[in-house]
Image 1 (cartoon, rainbow over the protein chains, first blue to last red):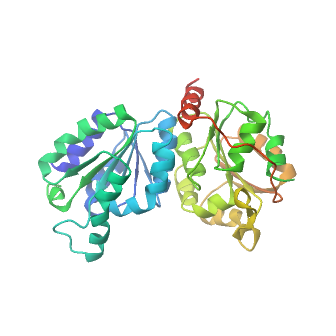
Image 2: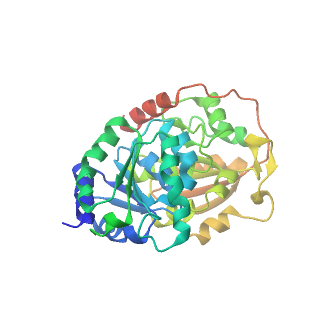
Image 3: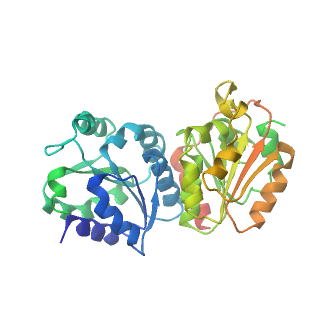
Length: 165
Length: 184
């Protein structure tokens, strides 16, 4: 099973039915599956902080949301994470394409990669780094943990992991 | 009429509706005028009232009114194409457009200059956009509540603020009672 299918299955196991996305090349496959899924509403966002607003509203409306984005988005979502998701204590699984790691062809992506874990750590956001395709099997338990804790949780999925797509 | 005058005309019309209010004075004024469990007060995160409102409207069937401001919509213009392309017939975005950043000292926004939010919203593909004078806001909200389509109302009012206290309610309490109102 490809990592895309494992991620989809994990989202289904956790009842995730509202997914907002800002694309990344590495996420193309999973975004396409979400778009095609009858049991998930896919709401593409123009910026990731907008997406977090959508997820917050959907959560209060009874949905189980998730956001799919690139790690560069950490730079534009810190305020939304601190003053909305964390302040009001809402769950938010963040499935993150971790650009700028080994295998990255674009030098500029490394500039945010070197800050990604430090920023998430500064925000006290539980963070899981998926490096090997088999790490995908932890997705379901991490999503469940996120909704239990009512916190944002980050799943960083790097280039080596996506070789399993 | 200033923003608080417009909000007063909407009470009790929207008292039992799900209302998401923008950071700063819109939340504080609504809290002072008509505190309800069905009000979600934003205490931070400028720009996202319309996004929270849309997410809420897409996730359940009750009417949702997001009370936003011109400065906040200018900050999150990306919300307008998202509203246009994700049909939520139960969503009303009420933009109180006083052409200024009211919560920070009434600095002029670009809608107080050349920019028309109604034109921008229409260009983004929003189908049902109404611009009205402050005095007519209530009538437009009545119509939108009776209707079955997403509505954006841009209420053109004067700049100015009343003195209101900061909201001291705990954010988790605001969220918890709001979610119970959603489910009621």
